[in-house]
Amino acid sequence: MENRIKEKEIKIIFLFVAALFAVFLLIPIARLFIKSFEFEGSIGLGNYIEVLTGRGFITAFGHSIAISSASAVVTTVLAFILTYTIHYSGIPKTYKLLIRRLAVLPMLLPTITYGFAIIYSFGKQGLITQILGRQLFDIYGFNGLLLGYVIYTLPVSFLLVSNTMEYVDKKFTVVSRIMGDNHIQTFIGTVLRPLLGTLAASFVQCFFLCFTDYGIPASVGGEYDVVATVLYNEMLGSIPNFNTGSTVAMFMLVPSVVTIALLHYLEKYNIRYNKISSIEIRKNTARDIILGAASGIILIAVISVFAVIFVVPLVYEWPYRIEFTLEHVKSVLTDRSLIGVYKNSIIVAVLTAFFGSLTTYGAALTTARSGISIKAKRLVENISLVTNTIPGMVIGIAYMLIFSGTPLQNTLAIIIICNIVHYFSTPYLMIKNSLSKMNASWETTAMLMGDTWLKTIVRVVTPNAMSTILEVFSYYFVNSMVTVSAVIFIAGARTMVITTKIKELQYYTKFNEIFVLSLLILLTNIIAKAVFGYLAVRKNKSKN
Image 1: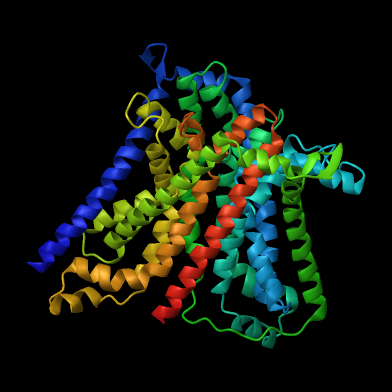
Image 2 (image 1 turned 90 degrees about the vertical axis):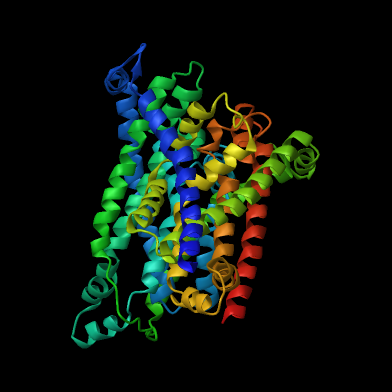
């Protein structure tokens, strides 16, 4: 009887998750796919032929491949230097902690802000240009995109490489030296080789993020067209063409398919150790100075781009009247429409985090703490894989097509659902991994004591998973505050959030307002991360 109840509860949770993604992922993407074949009142390949024979798209596609590849290589190298400094150098622990904190800081700002920060830092009248006395490079086109994309993807690459390097068994470096290997051989054999799969995965992930991002090209792309800007112009330009836009969106899914295939292939290169040994880092002053300096230069280069966000809104008129003032901040804080947009963002972020955490927790329970069928578990795993690789722009366009004219159009609810679906993968994997490590016999023991499965989940499993649930809440909250690529297609005048408002302000060149709103996002996310991080640590301590 108890097993039947447990199965019923699990099946309800599974059916909810399956229905959610069927309605809000499968059907919208299928509609987008069908739309791409609608050509002049009939079904055919006309749109695909038109897109492929048009010079603009092929050029933009080539640009996207080139800039995404270059950015992914640079980012992965920089992330490796930062993580190697943390794990294989003897620099002070406080400096290592600073590297960890600053490396992920760009995640707390929307990508559309990066471009404006680059303009006001490296433009002809930019802050860094003024300090150095000359402009270092042309900011519009390839150079600006490269800088923006590297800043954007560095946190992702850093977290990926750092997490793997934590589990590299460092005792093999000692073994290598004992066997007479030189420094290069030791480095290649004991550090680089175990990380090959992760470094390749970092390249793939960074490439995909760059290829599908809209925020950075929207501000510093210039005449260097990429696929994301072509897609935006087709769907929301002066003369929208939904059929052609749907076709371009289908082409944006090509990296998704390739990414899934490559990540599957790269799994076999991951080296797993039965036991992780920690060793004392050998003293090497030259190594520590070089690595410490290299990491410092990387982080200063990244953070200096954002320094302008704190400067421009606090002067009367950059760069002509550089006198301190709080007028721009006051004007934003007293503008009811801008404060309304900020409130929308907070509501969306909190509700996304709450319902997103519930959804991912339910999904993880079906795969990690249930006896549901293998096929059902595989379906949830596949949902995770797919959501990880479908661009936000494609989801946003699909929602715009399928939910126009429905009660969901121009509501905060559709933005919340979009965020839950778009960012599902990482939170799901976080909770699943946490649940998988817990004692597998808890439910059985509780059943023998007369407790129901649901009571066991609420009283035993959930408290032990609470620190991870808080991390998931934080992840959803922060990403909801900074997302732009998906919501730009589904946010209306009443449901506008900060990131879509920033895009609107760009047309009116109101950069003071843009930077003040960006600061609001940054400060909100820093506070949120600090609060959720503190609560997660407290839960971990009480659990131990």
